[in-house]
Length: 561
Image (cartoon, rainbow, N blue to C red; front, side, top):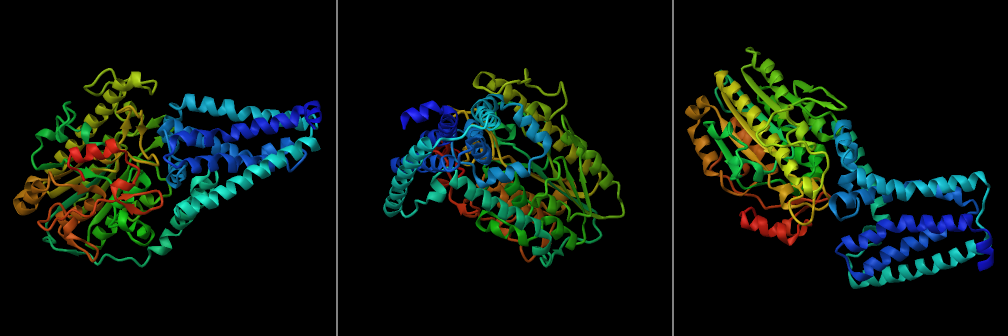
């Protein structure tokens, strides 16, 4: 048998090589995932046995390798994910992030994943080339080799199946569909597809939803309220939150402004956190997102002229669907390599304020904030922190990353101050509430974590910037609301739970779905249970959402939990 295999090695060696390549993610996950030793062994033996059985089932190994191309893609994606975040399988949210990310975002990210891309190309391109050569030369897998592979594959699969039964008996939570790559990833793909299909039917499932809004303020009084949704802005880099760099030189001098020092987001992903900010849905009931409407409709029912202005591209997500509820929905120009700056949204706000017929206005601004690449979030030459041109993401260039990130916060500070000045000068009763959707990792500790939306969060991704501002006229008319905002500046806050109700409360709008216990402008404010929205759309306490001990310790130190 061995002589026969060695005499015709092309397809045999291809099958063995391709099996090893496919197993690279499984081997890496053995070191990155906090699972039992038995789970690690099963995660190696079961897929190894299956791959050998599949590759030995047909003579034309080249065709089998090409047919297994989706597995190569999943393996490559998994390795890139491990490169980015250091652990975890490809989560449901990762697939949804892919389909809701616009081209300019994707290009910016891919440009800094050169090393990971090179590795996956080196691993997964040669087997495809080799497979093509065997097909052209009409090479086939000889029977002795096929029989040997089937025997080994069968034994490995049978042994791993028995071990899986034992593992489930020892721990009822153990499931092959959750613990074995790529079965777990395929399961997550199905969930992602189901969620995407559900989103496609949003118009139907939410059609009957009503807020029953009632305006309590003087109907003749001109008012304008602005909700600003920030992007990737973490609280620890805001001067207003105690940062030792002057990143908020403008807002620090702004009368009527209150910064919330202890605000946590319930999600580290944009496609979940933004819809929660814009609606009454929270981590504890997120699966109802397809049946509700946004705060825009709540204001419309109360007689407000509404506008949604976004500096992020439409992506067929709930954020887009919510924005389209507005009387005016406008997206800033976005093309590959050329993205609008957030300040440019103020030109559209000026047009809205020029409408003197509509005495009541509500505007939602969805900014691009501090999304990576940070130095492209503000005009060239802007910023106090230099140098800020970062070409590579590594520990050696971290200070450049921080400089550019801080400049993006400083830029946010500038245009938010300009927005407030514009509203003050309009002479209307006005208020602004701002919250970032989530934070960001910037190589902050020995883990080397970078960016956000990782399958397991960190402290840096969850402690977000949140603030409120009310105009001089508003403070004169409703001093108690302003006093409540100040009184709650240093209490624990769930940004994704409180932004909706705080905004409605400031505008004096009552709805059937309002909860004054969540409003920072209400004396009834009570912090809700602290929950994190996990990959399965379940609200879990922070101790069970994947945070490490160092993250929990930091949160406790800052009294966030």
